[in-house]
Image (cartoon, rainbow, N blue to C red; front, side, top):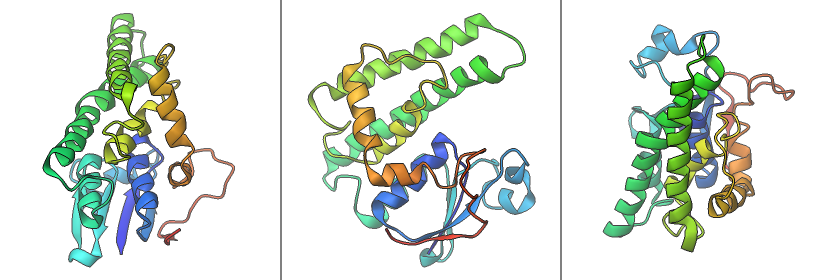
Length: 220
């Protein structure tokens, strides 16, 4: 059984979507970021960096893994799914996973910060991060020109990138003219596992009843 410590954020969604796609049972521990659960000693014992998500795999003697990209790789290797088994295919997925971890995540995250949360208006910073996010979207759009998914077959690279790109409106980064990207966004949005993963745990302010700490999510 896997314990998952997470919140309703793009990095959190990566793991809930993957777990739902893989039909792995897991126990959910909803981390309230507003209340500062991520800074409590019991959470810092799992991830000294104080960030979600984190998993603990009790089938592997309590193996603890943080960083969403590392967790995705672990789950893919554990199950032999969502990543090709051949060398070239495997590394194709890994490099596009790193593309999200080192590019879209940091750039779009900063775009959101300066668009919505920074205490003063810094136009040059807003423009810098929004423009770079758009440039990265254009790279993805080109990659998707002749294939349904980023690496051909649906993989953890798609899950990682999609969890961020789908929130482009929140960061006010346009996708106009990126027809391949928009088609890809819609294709993954239609997957039942992606839809379920976005609701675990329910977003802050959701009308749905909050999942209680420790609720077990069984195979679907």
